[in-house]
Image (cartoon, rainbow, N blue to C red; front, side):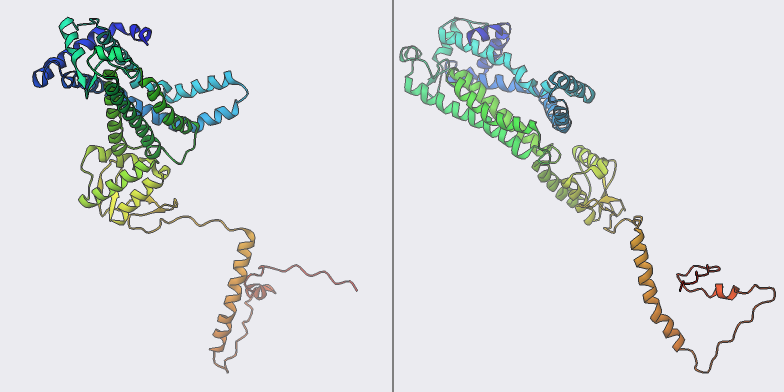
Length: 425
């Protein structure tokens, strides 16, 4: 670990300078040699770093969702070229390039935070060994070695022996109890953050290898934190626990306000948005308009939650517009849950009738003929009994058989009929 930390020694001086600046502020409130002054300095360092990494976090969210969208295509490529790994890799890189997606973007916050993590470890290790490092001089070194967090020295580890812990003014029991609690909290926060992502913010309609990978990381990361945590100083555990809590809160905010389409979080968000829009009969914020605009633009590609949101607004007499606004009393065509187009009033949209087969058309004609027979007899019965039909005289110049053609029955072919062939005796 010392070798890895030394690789990031170029950032040790800036990190130590930031800690000293925060310590000068908290030292005036709690005392320069207290664990509160040094502990809060480390917490403030984490908050400062995470605020600077917010743009990378937003990029990570977009990259993760883009990867989820590409999973079906990636699965097809894997099945098509399962016997040719080189061609499979080429097709994968082509897919990433065409879609503008970078798989490493989801790891950017962790990679960007790593130098600060190892630089802090290098600083605390120097405090534990009694060596000045960065801008921490002899007086600050002495003050830091006196600082205790809940009875555990800032630079003590779970694996330290009794002599080393005694030199820092503490006991092995205090150090191991405090470090064990912090390691458990650190692993639990990591597990909850990953589980929250898997259970609430993943599109459950698509089963891909990416989901299996994320599910595996949900159990691997906490175990890794537990194993490596026993070798971290108390100050580093404070740093890592703080960044885990920050990540958990930041992710909870994103899941609540910008969930993944098709996830359970989106269903809960759209339900809240529907109640809010129905109550005020309009979209009030820019974010609400952006969500409604995106749903309307999808058209028939809306998922189940988005269809339900549109239909609920329709039943309330509201219509979502293409610009993201919601108006009242305007007819707009939307989709039903089964995909049937409907109007804002709920009436089905007129559609072209389906073409019938030949057997269906023949059966319809037969049925119509059968229904028309009683009507004909009824009409004849209404005529007077003494009324006799007058034979129509053929008009001059008319050909014989013309009257026969005019009296052709319904369904019978008009025109001269082809004579039947004489039956053979």
